Image (cartoon, rainbow, N blue to C red; front, side, top):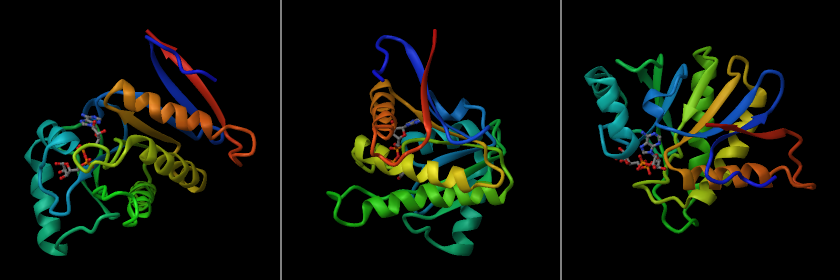
Length: 207
Ligand code: AR6
């Protein structure tokens, strides 16, 4: 399956009925989902990138709750996630996940990144949410190569979605077209014979 060119598209990765992993381009701050995930820092401070955008759009209630959590729990380790209010956002919760800083790949970065996805999925399912949306954690300021991140994110999310009790829709909202193309290519490659991935993948177009 080739990726479309010069068109907006989304990738639908059907895991069951109605469970679906969706990959698309967009701004996660206005994406409709019960929870959106923030690519956070260990201090849970409003930073740059998607974190800054989420705090700006959601307003000070998010940073206030982050500060409360920080004073109770201390630093959040890479690979962990905590849920807060979503403030003014349409989501019910923001789940703050601390990704790994890329250090060349032999410092456990992949395991830490997988843990981020697993912890967010576990938290959202425990909150009995039906939908969750992720950015490509660690692939901006933290420097994780996008293709390697996709090879961690997609199998982690598929595995967790299959086991989830409440979650039925998991979206990965990629900020730029290049990142979506990479994630779409990885999703498609996972369907290759012998990949062991039994799921159906479809690419839908929209104008
Ligand atoms: N919607 C979706 N994705 C976005 C958006 C958006 N509105 N804005 C950026 N991205 P980054 P990290 C993408 O740097 O690498 C912060 O300061 C972006 O293109 O936000 O995990 C935190 O506080 C990239 O692909 O997060 C931490 O200190 C992806 O989101 C540190 O940066 C992640 O990029 C975390 O770095």
